[in-house]
Length: 435
Image 1 (cartoon, helix red, strand yellow):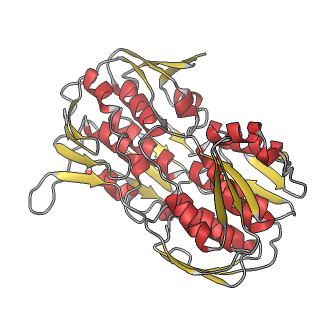
Image 2: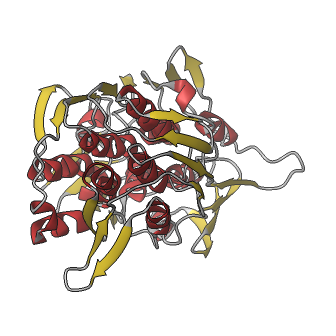
């Protein structure tokens, strides 16, 4: 298990470019299974979750070829269907939550699949009902094999249908879309997720020959086709990295430029940080954060305490609430953080409290942060990263703190952030990796 040793109090200088979006990459790579022709994908982040999915796809028989920095070619023209029923496949899927996205493409093209309960962050219940109900509506039949702990699914005849999703699940929507593109007839998905990464998936599928309309809305219509062809696709910058760098600059009192952020795809993220009192300047497709000695939280028009809550797009992504929470610890004013989606994601605040933060954990979903206004700095501590987003929040806290901090279980951070210590050290941070 690796560790980061961080010497806090160093300011950052210069510019940084966000990696490709992790959540989009997992969807896009899975979609390459839908055709036997080559698919070229660019701006793929070099992170643990994505690399594990690429390795798994290679074992499945996909021809994987690296053609440049962060660019790969995939060709699924000779998949090993027996491997996808093996113990090794089940074990690999159980360690990677993104493996659930392989389900839709397998059913659409091969009419059968075998899927293990996927792994991922331990941040509370993450049910798969939306995936399974939607795919069952299209005609798939599920059988749970208790001996192997896998779902065996057959879909001899997929037929389009109108469906109203019980939740706007991003991965659930992606899986249903990838199943429906080759189903007979028309599929209508209402209450669909409409995040930029879903939009990107639909645009890529249309380039492959799919017929998808309603992109960027919560009402998606898909006219099934018999086959798809190859294409080229470029992944968006990771909006969670962009938000992390905004918070990092403010928390450390640094001047920082974030390059090539695809600003129009960030939604309300910049305005959420402005509510914390952080100056976020758009310069073309870059974001400039000036040095902040202080930043003051806005209040609502009626004078009530500012609150941040996650919501389906175009609401605030839940993946940034951990960052917003830690940045609020040095703001002037108080903030209520309401994490609605995951009931265990706020449990990392005890580590911030140990560092001197003033936080009241009201329940598994809500925390009140009383900002220090930079009058009292956090102090170094020894801690462990419980998940990707809490991990980056703890790293931001350690970079701003007095003294030395040690973060263990940094493999969780590696799952979502590419060479993070090298990139931040180049800006002036003091982060050392110990394996």
